[in-house]
Image (cartoon, rainbow, N blue to C red; front, side, top):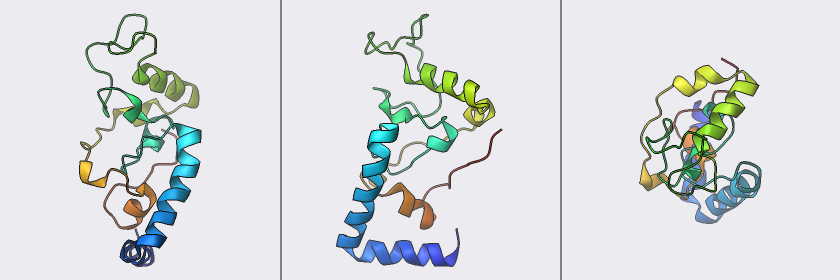
Length: 132
């Protein structure tokens, strides 16, 4: 990111109330729209705008070995596997190649922080908006 965005992120981090407002604004949008789980390391643009952290095992790089033949979750059989949903949506959107990118493991230190400000600060990779 640019120096301007880095400086903005640093400024927000130094001012807890401002940072809290940024987190509140981000969650006000992302939680109802994407069912965001507030990991602070958003990869929605790579997973067809479906939060993979909704997986009970929090799998970020594809389904676990327990996905049932009908696409149901091993832990919660009444639900579809989140990766089954991500694949279907990515296929409809023409974004299947984005699913091939290996995602970094979750850094728990970033949980409940602003993914937007983490991108600006260079702590996480920026989103990928284009198609495959």
